[in-house]
Image (cartoon, rainbow, N blue to C red; front, side):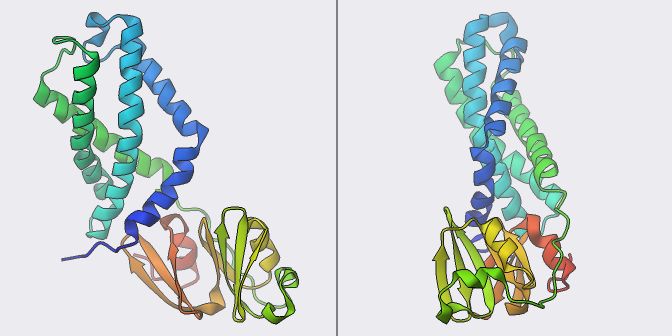
Length: 265
């Protein structure tokens, strides 16, 4: 039986964090809540006054929306690690996520609605929530992750990287990796690691013309320092000459596949 890699959930949540912090995500939820509050689905337009109805749908959307998004995304990775195709893994994870979402909905209903406010019984409501969750999970996968970015070109090494000039003389050695930590970038060379007050994107620009790839929003690696690459579910792990393994997010897999270091699936 296929095993789920230990770092899978942590890496998935790491990819989700910029989306969950974006204003567009929460603005979209607010817009959806207002539309549902005005439209009044499931019979709430006839049984619940407008103000209470808008409040109800805002609570529903802002509790179940982020929950379903996280559970569907992480579940998609888990089911894909169990050898399901990505699109099917998204659907199955959405169906499964519909169960805890249903529990949240029933709790909110008990607090904010009166008996008879919903024109739907419990079982059809659960099935409807599971179906909506599956559709939303598949739509999220297609919208955010089905189209990988264009591969990053690998430049041949021919000159001294400007980034090395920022390092102490005893650390000016071949670049191995760059790691983003808050507002800093950890520069790892064959002589050790130095932390610089520098954005990762700027450090990558100054690493040229060292051949390298951005494999994650927090990691860049020198391709001539890669000793091994292995898949772990929908992602991969790159091992470098310093012995450490670096996760490759699925949005950057295509760039690694283009180098020939990772066979496509």
